[in-house]
Length: 196
Image 1 (tube, rainbow, N blue to C red):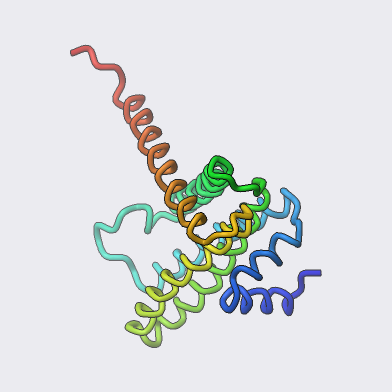
Image 2: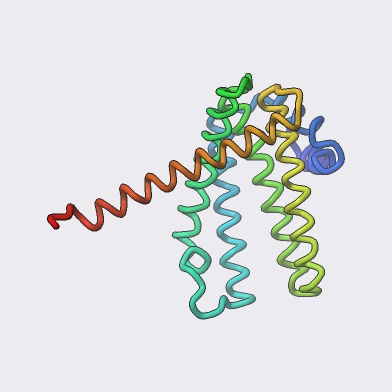
């Protein structure tokens, strides 16, 4: 059963031994409904934290709407996370991975929930010691990549962090191409046909 003690223990293990933590997350065999609910909960909490940060530290004039309009931010983060999960699942399968969609989703959702908890701590630290918060955020980004590679490795049963890195890079490329095509199609639909 997942109680506060289990979650805190899993969070610590994710930092100390991400490969073992990834296996524990996969062993939970969470249902599709639980995973989708948890994913959107993480996105909602992420959006609330951004709104709180904007109240405490108002953004500079000219800041893109992505970081000032909660609705836009929510839609972009939700879309990005869903696209990332599907890209990791499909590309991992093409490159020899054995993980199903729910396996990939499980580890990414857990990482998202951890990120929300860390961002809440970082926002508190930002009020007390802004320089330290910036350094900690940078270090967490680097270590978060290390955790992500182990999670991809476990989800797809690759037995190689190097192969997991290949899956990650290829997934980001596929996602970038798909986003570019989508924006091009959306732009063309907005502009309309050219009669020149």
